[in-house]
Every structure is written in structure tokens, then in C-alpha cells.
Length: 106
Image (cartoon, rainbow, N blue to C red; front, top):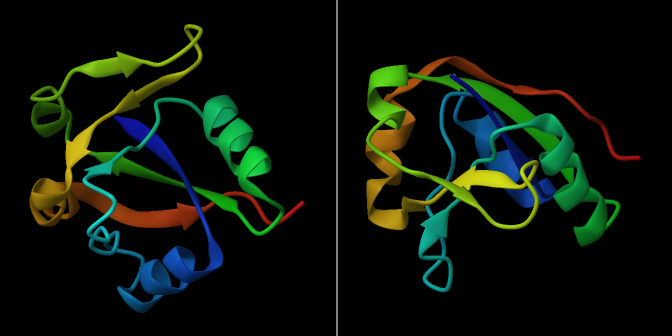
């Protein structure tokens, strides 16, 4: 499954430092990692945060992501997965290929 994630400059630098293979650990005040289901929603989030956010995309193993429920947090476009912070290392292990930057700051 292809997922998307809005990221700030610091998070993007950490992804780059991982060789484009992993998302960085969550901060203590961030108990959930939430990749989103479609580019449109990711871009909406990125543009609302501020102009320094980009969007990345990646493939995740279908069998793995099926273990989580899709959360709809607005309209049908606003769908995301809620991955507990303590699950992020395992989540990263199920990323297929590399994380890709698909937008530049606008």
C-alpha cells in the first residue's frame, strides 16, 4: 500500500540521514505516528502547518498495515492510520524500498 506523510525540515533531514529508509522516533509529546492514505490530504496538512513542510510517500507491506484500522478524521479524503509511537521501529521495518520526497516547499 502506498502512504503519504507531511514532514517538516527537521523530520525530512532525519529521513534523509536514514538513507530514506525510516521515519525518526516520535517525541514524548507525540504518542502517535499518522501516515495518511492519499496525497491530497497530506498536501492539505502540509500547507496548513506552514510553508516549510513537504510531503513524502512510501510503500508499506499490505499484510502489516492490515493490522491497523483506517481512521477517518473529517471527510472521506481525510483518512490516516494511527501507529503507536512504540510500534514505529516495526513500522519502519515494513517499509518497502525507500521513502520518496514528492513535493518541494510551495
